[in-house]
Length: 143
Image 1 (cartoon, rainbow, N blue to C red):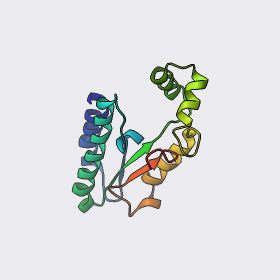
Image 2: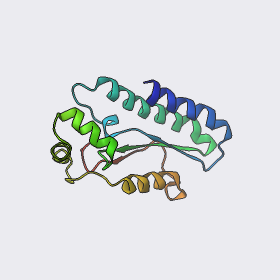
Image 3: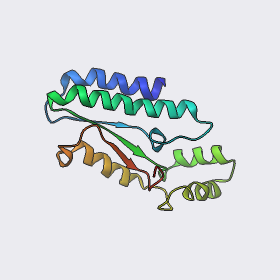
Image 4: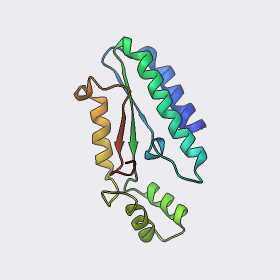
């Protein structure tokens, strides 16, 4: 909660006075911010809280022309994710990755660039009429 929720809250609180019409805030949540699983109550609570933060800020800042959205990545092909998979499954890295990929309808981890492009979309003028949205970049995990 201190990192995910309080950190995001404080960044928004202190950045908002400096933002003008056309600005965009993108809060990083997780596929778990839209779903949940047994045994991850703290993480799930924190990621769901970010959606509440986003929805409230989106309503409060819309009159100023500021957009606020969340992005919800699923498993990303990086060392951090692979360590989580090993810890969660108790399997070696290769088998743990396959186990997680079986949970993803598209059957693979996201490339970091895929998440970055989605983030860039939300931050750019290409999404100028998008606020209060939860963008899923999870290969279908949350459907």
